[in-house]
Image (cartoon, rainbow, N blue to C red; front, side):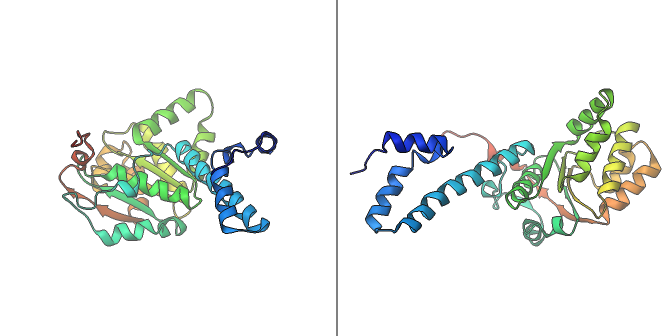
Length: 251
């Protein structure tokens, strides 16, 4: 029979900011009694629960701050979807050596084949392994940089984007970029060249980016620096989103 925790113990756990242990502690104490663990092993078991809980919460908060979608993780990736890609490249990317070696990743393919999901999934892996990550669509990224010019925080915002371990830019080059946006993108790519990693998803090949950027010289420099330091994962096939549609479960 499971015993309730004493009021004094609950009070002390609260003072020590260990209140999250309270729901699981009765079951842990029962296991400790059944196994006859000594005090040191019992403390190790109980405190390990709390350390693991806090680490899970840290990962969740860091992923939220990085603007990663919590549902876009590799556990949800459907490897049997009717799309084609080089699985060896994806396996290599999942090792995250590209971050340690300051390489980039280009995920390119038509609408709906899973580029965004893979980008977010790589971001989640990076967070779990202690890397700093920022993820945003290109439109939101450039909108934020435009706004930072108005309140005088532009250089600070650029520094933040330049210094993060992994910068993920989703849906790049969906539309033509303005002079200011082209300059900002050039600065990001140049400043991060061989010092930090980027993941970019796009419906367009890099050669097509040239026509979407306003300054030909900046465009050529940007494309050259990025492409010659990037893994290419080309995804083709039917839209992946049909596998994410809500369905009524059978009774």
